[in-house]
Every structure is written in C-alpha cells, then in structure tokens.
Length: 101
Image (cartoon, rainbow, N blue to C red; front, side, top):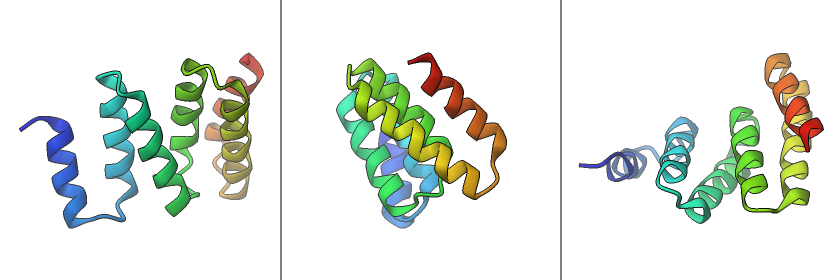
C-alpha cells in the first residue's frame, strides 16, 4: 500500500487529525500533485487554523504555482497565528519566507 493510500485510510478513521492531513499534503507534493496538496492544506487550515506548520508549506506551494499574492496571504496568516500561539520559531520562518518574496 502506498503512503497516500495509507494516509487516506488513517484519515477515514480519524478525519479531524491535522497531522495526518499535513502528511498527506506533503505526500502529494512529493509526487507533484500540487492541486491535491493545495486542497488538503486549505481544508486542514480551514478546520484547524492553529496548525502553524502548514502555512509555510502552503505558502511555498503557492509560490511554486506562481500565485504570489496567495503565498503572501498564507505567510501573513501563519505569522498572525504563530504570534497568537507564541510559536516564535514558526513566526520567524514564515517572516523570512515572506521577506524572500
């Protein structure tokens, strides 16, 4: 069973598990299925906006897709959330990614 199939099976049992959704999105990125990865990240963050690590990966994905405005929005939203939950390491990574644009 490949990793995507396996993660989907786990998600069927635990549909609210943000870690599993994040892992699934990363697996889609590995196989260059950027649209599926984007959908998974966006669903994850809609349901769990405090899952800070996904904002960085979503932003990088959006950059690769050429959607600079959406990437900036993802980084900035992630920075706001990181500040709220006091995740300063994540905040600094998001800020650096935002500044690199």
